[in-house]
Length: 238
Image (cartoon, rainbow, N blue to C red; front, side):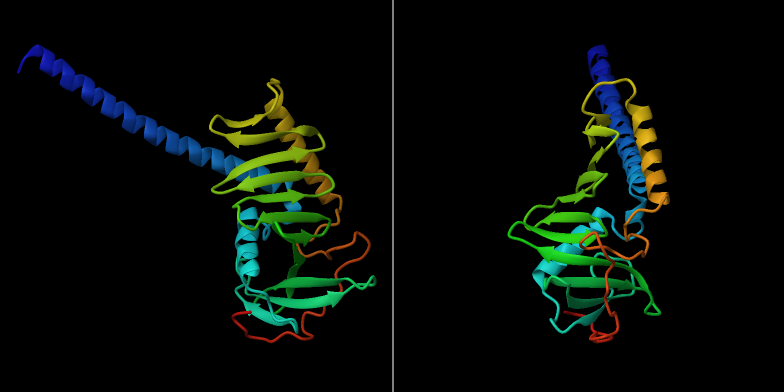
């Protein structure tokens, strides 16, 4: 075998080795970025923990749009999207005569864990939690969340874009990592400061329902739902 052939084989081997190294490094980087983004979501939106991750809401809305629950109310075991034992569904009328579809998430003993309202329009299925609202596209795999002080957009498998009062310009995740839309050198510190500030706001007592506090559909009063009234215990479909 000539010297030229040996050099050619060595170059090919080196190239293959570099490709394998780059793929492994890229996979590790992607996993690290995904973990950082999930941590940022948890820090900035403590009121949505642990039930209202956008992937959970997406799964729920898809199932709910495919099948409407009984108008008389029903209890559903293992409701789609939510890691809970059961959910009670009821249809309630508020003081203004508007009907609301209310869901109560329950633990294994039937105790309420959280509550939300479902509604829909021609484009989206919507989940209202306290003063916040999720919008899930009927035909698009994307989730948008809005509340008076924070917003985010999410799409599978885990692309995030956050907006907070301290940074009205959105920052998101892309192939180059997490970055604000401007190029300020203080981006990282702003992210940390924003997360800490939002966590402080939530700790001071916000009108949210992620951890089981009373939800407020109209911003004035909590959900007045009778989770045992017309529910059909033990039902598995709706």
